[in-house]
Length: 538
Picture 1 (cartoon, one colour):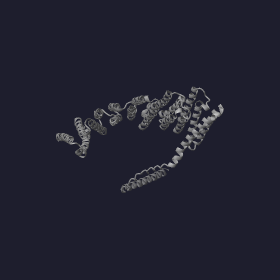
Picture 2 (tube, rainbow, N blue to C red):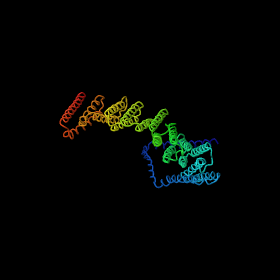
Picture 3 (tube, helix red, strand yellow):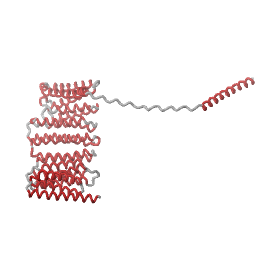
């Protein structure tokens, strides 16, 4: 038995030894084999270029986008006229029920269609909301359909209707629904007589549109509302009897200006609540359109009903824009928005100056306003304001031809104003503004030429130009600014051309002698100064 066990154990040991020997032989062969050849890395996978966007089909865009909007506008206006002209023959319940039934039916159709055609359905749904607003509006404000006598109750219902439009559009996150409903609500409300309560109802809609600007940062809805209210006012102003029917001239003007002022305040406040969250382009667009609407339409209305107060209106607009500029600075708005407000404030004032002044007083006033704008622009760091100031100085320079006398003094004042603004533009400035300096030097050159041309007799025009060039050279060397010297060279070139082609044969002997002598001496003096300056540099 023991022998059998010993034999089995020896067999196991022998098999293990054979296995170990085979493994050692295999390891030896692997060690003796040449190293494997390294394969090159696979080429990098280059992502395929994104397919170029397909060009927009103009025909499809017109057919789907614009025709749907034009169609809903025409449809809602048609329903509004139907309510105005034919609902008065119906009973009270029929007026209310049929009107809201049309609104609910159109809205329901829009919701049903939006399941398969989202945009088209939202347009119809927004039209239904707008029709519901007009039905509510007509229940008091359209005499033929009037059901509610209480003005307070009518305004409360309109406010609730506006809130409903805002809530529904906000919950749907649909800018299309909000835009269609509010835009059509604004326009259908103007189909009846325009009164103080029409102003309040449209103010509610505008406030609803501005909610989306402040809350959702939507741009199209409030921007279209801004355009709608001012364009509607144009139509309203053209209909003389539509403004406070039966009221006095003062009542009509007050209502019209109240309409414009309320919308101006609403849009300005909405823009300045969180101006940093809006892009610069959006902020500038709102600010400029709001200012242009108020200024243009308000000026037309004041000129129409109370022209003696036109200048006061321009001053009021200038103060309003300046106040908005202060608000923009306090709210941390972009520098571009702040500069837009202060620049348009000065422009408003400058546009009103001709309505109050004329002749030499007009030139002096524009000069003072331009100089003040240049000084304020340097103080506030508003380059746009400085540019407006220079533009006003050029406007005053052109207006110096209006008064029959005293133009030399006006041009002298403008020469000083141009130099002051130019010097301030480079004083302690980290970045030079060569374009502004060149414009100021050009304006100073014109002012000097016209000033001396007014002082000397007409026969000595060339001599006046030479003296003006010398004055510009002296100024350029004094303040060490080459732009004035360039202006002097330009004026001197014109003087030489006139000397050769006009004065050489056209002047009497004594005047010809004086002109050539003085002009020659001036040329030599200027050349000597240039030579001396060059020698000092070398």
